[in-house]
Length: 78
Image (cartoon, rainbow, N blue to C red; front, side, top):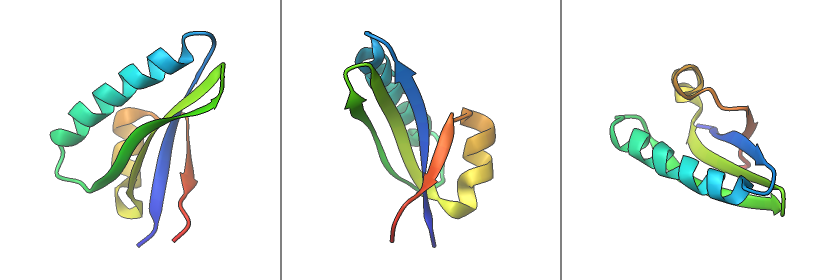
């Protein structure tokens, strides 16, 4: 089964702090769900662009998309 990386983009001088805080909420949310979540973290793209992300199964994409409203998604390589 394919994996999907749901992504939230944060930009500006406070992007890192905002993304780190968003990750906390994503982890809290995933603890309440029965769906498979494979990773939740953040990644610094550059000093003013940081992403928070969650990796899920393809079959759960509609559920998470509708409930969490990510900015975008990317298919993960197998």
